Image 1: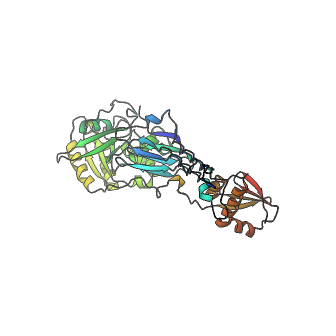
Image 2 (image 1 turned 90 degrees about the horizontal axis):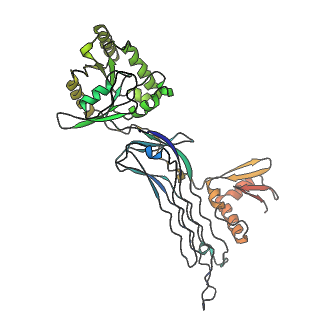
Image 3 (image 1 turned 180 degrees about the horizontal axis):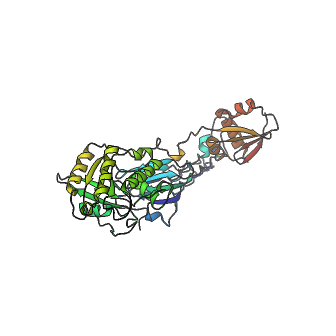
Length: 422
């Protein structure tokens, strides 16, 4: 089974908690705090695996979680870091955020590895909070929680040449005679329901990859028929061969077919619609001369090259292959998937926080506040002092005063509701 689209949930490991311990050793007076740090949670990486061809492994296994970091302990012993999780995917896999639809990573190179989710940081033990005035801190930091995200995995084939055309125009036959691929061939629509790849060996000893992709019909850009699967794979190619049936046996109008397919390409992607195309007039062994004239006029009107072939007799096939090889030399290899600078989810600004006032209540939120509240013990006086000092250093105090906070007002920090006092 060929699987090229799936949704999964990934979660990086939680950081371990710091320890609140004190040195207790015979003959050692005032040993002091010796709580160790918690270990960082495991990261999640996606890595290209050359032995994988589909996303079938994700059909039933939908949840992936990295290991948590271990808690710290006494005698300055730090917790063990959680093991990183490496998720193997086939080359050509694109990772998207379900919530935003943005592309997070494009795994299109051999052995490529990308960090997608960072594990939570381990909390610091109480030994870090000892000062000249606070020599026995009875609090430590909790570890940060790992990030959890729902993502989409899309497999987009990596081919130099893509075959365009309505079903049953001879694309699969062409692929079978120019490569060692064995696509299913029959005289009915949608014989090809999964993409087929084949490598063409040229006279010069070089080669290029051709993708025979499921036929496209009107409405494909909105998901009609096999359209989205088709467009997802043709997006990767550098050159498009647009096959038109000039036999007239199917009762179709090849000129209308040409414009119909290009209309769908444009709806899906402006860049894809501008990719170089060569018109291939197929089934020349049973050609309808009137239809051929229409196709010749079309090529002239659109300024496109036209090659006439017969998949059945192999007429004109070698000339077309030679021309494709020359054309590809002048088409640069580039990243055909455009996306913003690669995003690792947890690389957002850790100092970011916001305050809003609703019905007299001040609500303070943001990544920095989440991290801070995860590291304090709200029931411990020394920890509360640390919280107040941190809020002051972050500028939260000053902003609250600027917004008119008064003694007795309610201030919400994440899930904690506190009363403001000077």
